[in-house]
Amino acid sequence: MPVDPLKIAIKGSTQDHLPIEDVVDGIVLLKDGACASVMQISSVNFDLLSEPEQSALVMAYGGILNSLNFPIQIVIRSSVKDVSVYLKRLVDAEGKQTNPLLKERIKFYRKFVEDTVKRNDVLSKTFYVIVRFSTVELGLKNAGKFDYKSILGPQKNRTSLPFPKEYILEKAKASLEPKIDHLIRLFSRLGLEIKPLDNTKLIELFYKIYNEDIEASQKLENFDYNTPVVNTK
Image (cartoon, rainbow, N blue to C red; front, side, top):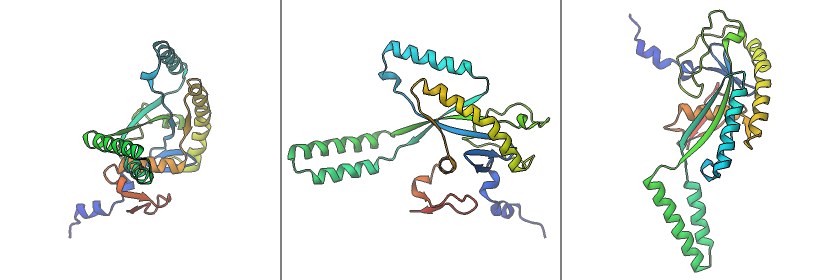
């Protein structure tokens, strides 16, 4: 009796179709043996700077990029900001306020925020810097060109690891750690804070990326990604 391919596909795990093999010690291990470190970086309000400050910042940023002897990826992720908690705080503050004038002001401001959210999506932007450890650095002759595709997005399914996991991670750490330290020093000169994401933050990030439609209605319960990690509210 022929086997229905649809039934086989349904039995497959979602993780089989992700490029990520594991997340260990803040390092994202991909299924082809490449690794990456993801760092979240703070931002500045460029429009609020004076023209000389803007020029100085652009020149300093260009100097940083020109001084690098290894590739990096800069990713800007936009997401709809949930202001429901903030609105609830305004409602609570309005109820506790005894001064009629201040009470009216809070109410007016709350209505303004509610109307703004209804008319436009309030977006929150998060900035990331990604450093890659390529399969070329593992010594794979058939690795091909360096893959510049961001790990913060869908990729084609990968094959099994070319080397034992412990060996790959050891090589990746030796390559990535000095690069991370170098980037932290460089961006601190611009007054920017840059911090590598740990396992928990990485799992949260990838969960939100691959579950954009439902992540707002589900809560992460644990971070053992070999078992279900979410709970529906």
